[in-house]
Length: 327
Image (cartoon, rainbow, N blue to C red):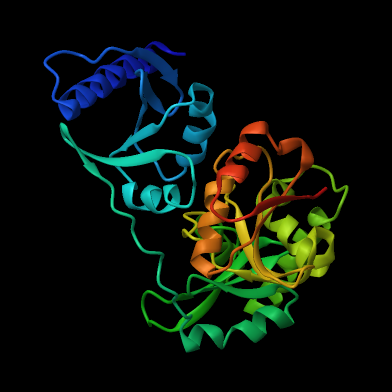
């Protein structure tokens, strides 16, 4: 740990003890033990585990549950950001956990925020979906945005022209890539440009392909694409992509993705796809099930990425959570 990181950790530890002291109405620091916690600071008392998250807390519930499980005490989770999201997800577990919103020196019970409203894509944007499909990409809508994916990797998006306001198709992976592509290949017809990109990308999304940026991004969406071709591979009879419970902020950071369908028993379920060890995937998955109104969760994951803490979280979820192993 760097000197700056150590200093930050000490400051957070002091801040946490002060918040606990003020909240409990004590004249001095409570009796307990400070603990190192990678996402902020922790303090262990006889009857609680107090955890303070530093900054962005949107994906902190899973790591907090995983880390705090060893103490076998109720958890008090203190956050300055994303308290509504965490309160909603915490209510979907049987584990004794309370989310608090930090406002300066005071703690307030976090209020669960509702799910994002369903947003339909503009008709002018949907009108470009046949063009995306005819070029060989998979046209889909996520939180009202029309995108084209090549085996799970977003390679085009429909946007409104900033000058004319008209819908147009931009080719590329991410906003910077789309801008660069337009500068270099702006003279190409959009359909031909997209076909060129698809041909260049597909070869790198094949099983056994050499390491390349085109197969290092969106691995979880590649898993979903494969399952959509063969839902039986993860125990479903039919499967369709659906909105995740939170919007993606970019295409390069790994974030679980979601599909909705019917499992072999005939029940409706969500499938949540992840690549690598992700301690927050179970809270994300049960949140997705709650959003789509189903009572079954299947986490599609590599077998080596299933940790004991993930299994413990699955057992503590308010809906059945099972794991389907993928290559």
